[in-house]
Image (cartoon, rainbow, N blue to C red):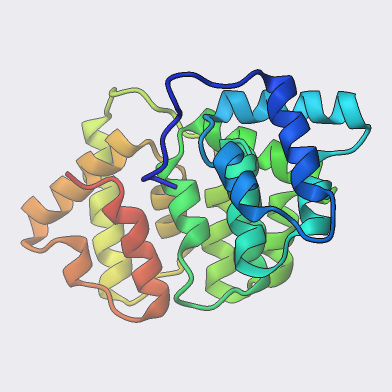
Length: 237
């Protein structure tokens, strides 16, 4: 997708919809035509195509694609057609269905999106699957992974640069004590890493290194701890 570009002159939305309708007609699906259209439009243009297609033909474009396409190609086209929040919702749903200890998709979404982007992804998840992301995370994950992921996907973090240095020192000490005791899934560890702002966690991790001589990633091991490091890695300087 990254190598595809929007042409300088873009056909009208109605023309795109007509061409997509033709791509679904006949004995076989014209996959090349679908790529030419959906793969060379930006998110705003694809959203308008979806809206116009539904108004013109009385059918959701995504459902039409689902009927006509299959396997990896279908998934690729669906990712093209979805807006960013819907795409995150789809990827998060896939991650909950095939969860393994090394699967970091949910962590990536929760850690790299802004508070509003994550909220929109959760709303899109609810609209698409008629249940909450939190519900599926709770149902498909267990133990320490559930304890970490639930607050992470449901938090609405402060995104400003203001930092409480007294709190950073206190929580660096707390993290060091818990990690020294290998209490990686302690509620306080999860609370600090999953709900504090990135700026606040940065301050805490910097103090951790300065005070105790190690980056936090030098003091953790194992699959669950690797997920903690994914989280910490998105906020460290």
